[in-house]
Length: 222
Image 1 (cartoon, rainbow, N blue to C red):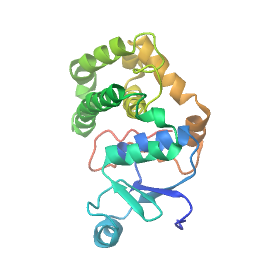
Image 2 (spheres, rainbow, N blue to C red; image 1 turned 30 degrees about the vertical axis):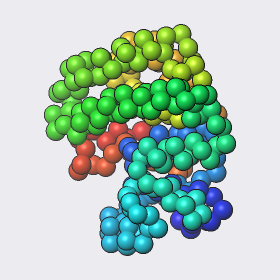
Image 3 (tube, rainbow, N blue to C red; image 1 turned 90 degrees about the horizontal axis):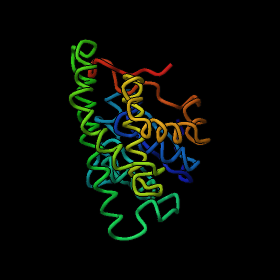
Image 4 (tube, one colour; image 1 turned 90 degrees about the vertical axis):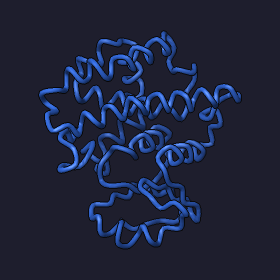
């Protein structure tokens, strides 16, 4: 894929996992970006990582002209910055802290989901693990959301991390997430949005949650 200096470049392996919250944010806001997928580890580790203009070269990274940002949460925040919507970072200082709190809480849930996806006995332990590990998180998230459209009452950059995590859980077990009606409706609002639904149907959309060989559940979308 030829790179362009006129658009954002979001680079990651050709799977979803740690880059997907950012992809969702860009798609939702209909930002034109180049979705760069690495498929050959040698290309990254043997070439591009050494030449990336960053003090902290890593995947995913987002490149905007001469600016290169790495680390998943910083990449997500930079993408939010590029939308021009300052409210994504909070309408006041306290909300900005609460957004980081939400992201961190969701990230703990995502870590548990990733561990489940890696488990060699995934099919055997899925239901029990979701019940034990995910339920406490989802109960709190559901209570926090209540009857609002968004946890903070308006859209923030952390919402895309929450949507992404709920999306993975729903793909693992649709009936499990359905136990929390407000979280299910929250997921539907994002999934049915024009930008996200269009991106999900596009040819550049990565179908695998994670690569075979590293994860037992690869979450391939049909």
